[in-house]
Amino acid sequence: MGIPNLLSLFRLALVPVFVVVYFSGLENATVYAALIYALACFTDVLDGYIARKYQMTSDLGKILDPLGDKMITLAVLICITVDQIIPFWAVIVYAAKELLMALGGLVLHKRAGNIPKSNVLGKVATAIFFVVCSILMLFPEIPGNIASILICVAIGGMLVAFGGYLATFLSMIRRDDPPKQGNGS
Image 1: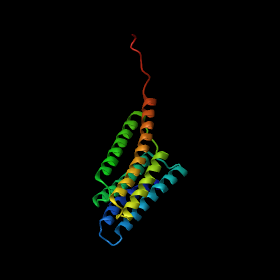
Image 2: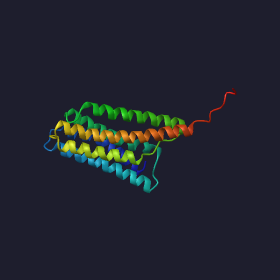
Image 3: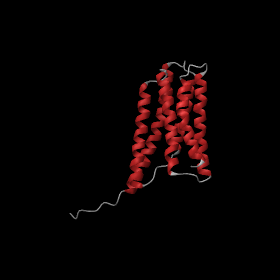
Image 4: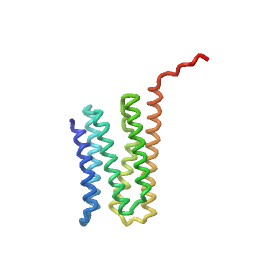
């Protein structure tokens, strides 16, 4: 287990810490929670950098890294939804997209024997989510219509990235399909 995977496990461990701090009732709890979220995002950047620079990528890392990203983002979305900062549908859309990506990843792993790498669109969408969710946590008094617009921007970026994932998925599935045999007629 290399450093990148340990950083991904650490990010996963930050998920319950984030939730507990967010709802702790402490003065400035959302500031502390936002700092935990920032730390989680920093570990994401760091583990990816280390894995690429030192050729420490692994199949386990291809699972742990996005799992850590998705779990912390889902925790943030659920917390700010419970606080009625964003509408519940945002969590549903995010969770549905992640479920589809997980199922697609399983299909690709079974058919092609590999897992697609992250792409620039996904990284940009993650950055947008981080910025939007941090703003919403740090400034919960933002009017509801503005908060909805912000989360729509984040979800829009996520859906664009999902479109890129679908294109990659379809390309990999087609590439793995055996050539069609004629039936002789």
